[in-house]
Image 1 (cartoon, helix red, strand yellow):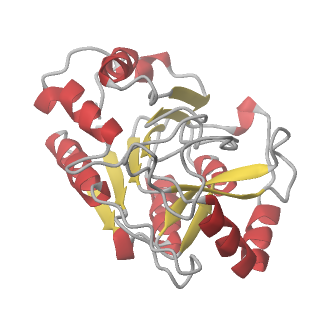
Image 2: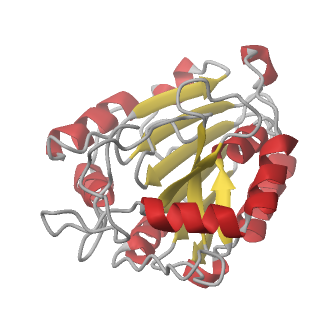
Length: 281
């Protein structure tokens, strides 16, 4: 029988000692992770939740690496992330457009998109990987993505827009200070991972449904992030009928015009995976 395991990550803050005094306080990321945990458990996944201080770089990397060893063809691994999205300079020169790597802002340091890319490469053929990322610039965070905010609502050291909405985005000042204070650490991380453009290098199938496009920001909320709230409404306590594309379209219909969930696929094509009802083991 196929096996399903899940990792649900939610950070309402980060460690200011790593992020140059910035704590990145948010309201609803832990609630998002709790709700994604409930969905996964209802579908008989074995779930590991990592909340705020427990959501360290080592914990996330170790859990994903362990899943890569454990899971076999036909199994499924789900990862959900709710927290800030960040950026660091691209040092291995695989980002031709803006020379920046996208990141997940974990509690004690950022996890580069390059690192996620290398983790997906560890999974065996036939494994399905399902990723939900409710963070800013998350449209293609599972691969080597890029985006630079130009003239957007976040131009100060806060992550609050002019409309009063809190966004899941590390402000440029904090990003710069964090990088300068940890320059050697991030440069060494970037140099370790080399991009491969060969589809054959991916044995597993990776499907990302994200909180927004690369050119957009994901809003936090009182009870859930904007994306996760609409995902929950589309899922409707398991009453949703349809495949992943229909699920994505149902979420998009509910989203505001300035935040559009992305549907992104990398790795070995698996039409049977995409045609399943979401969260099917």
